[in-house]
View 1: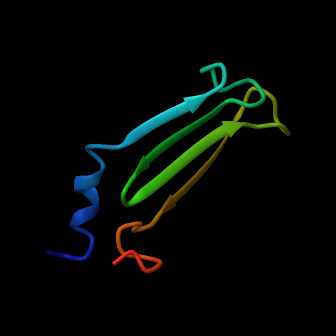
View 2: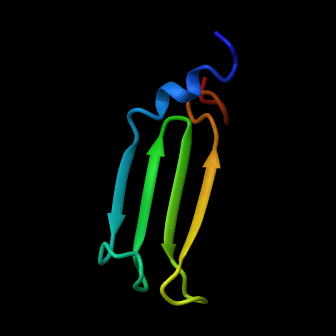
Length: 68
């Protein structure tokens, strides 16, 4: 298997969670998209009202940081 071949397959079964109002425009609103090889979250920006501040990371939770 090519080194990056396993990652696209993981995009088909992510987990999505959210907290807050569900509108992503109020303080405390938060969402997270997560899978074994990636994670992305967003929260309502405090500095710029009615905007979303995204965070994302692509990592291999299965084998990095001693996972294997």
